[in-house]
Image (cartoon, rainbow, N blue to C red; front, side, top):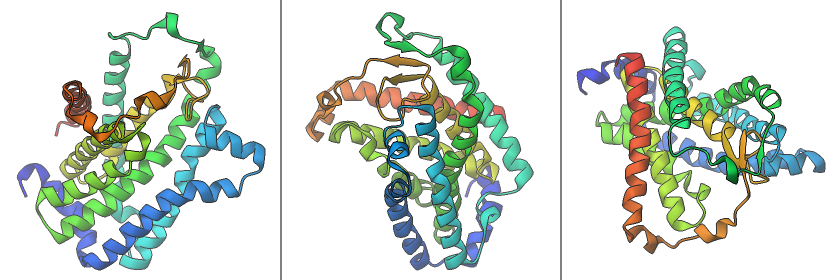
Length: 301
């Protein structure tokens, strides 16, 4: 392991007490099922009028409820790690002071970067908007959204960059193992977010690259704070700036475009061979790369 990842050794140490791959595979399979089934389970607990808000996410409360679901997933992860590895929450996080400091530094750096990008071309086409939410009523949701996004992104980073990265590093010191495998799994979990096979692959590519950026920051710093900070700022802008009116998870967006028929984007995998995909891949890579660099500059790593 190179010197730039020296802090990773201490971060991985808790996993060395239970380096066998069997428990890791069991936890990984169970966590995939938990990620898939938890929204349905939570939905069955809600009355009908709340269920509609929860499933659509077209209102602020609906989106917040969707994100809060990750608290259930986090609780399940903690139980599984205690059960199979006899270790707890902080063993997957890192030193608390450094974690909080890195979360703030990386989160603020990426936030400023994305804020600048928002006001640069290609600008929001105001003539095409169907609604701009009143600034004051939109702004009151910023703090609650940050809180629930810490739960959502923190859960994902705790699992993928905390537990899985540590356990993979306990099995092998090769970066393609401890950095690559959790990132590929993270990307695969986002495939269904796309509109059709080709869009799903591009979405999975975006998530895989985000996972690699977060894995690298975790290895450089020895905690998951910077990974949460980058992930948090990215998701904050994704949820709160632009959306399509009435579409899933649009309830917090400031600027709303008319809803579109997403079936028109249901391209087959053969579409990935077309030239325009190269531009998409380059744009995705640059977007993640710039956020990663901004976080590294702020962290001085």
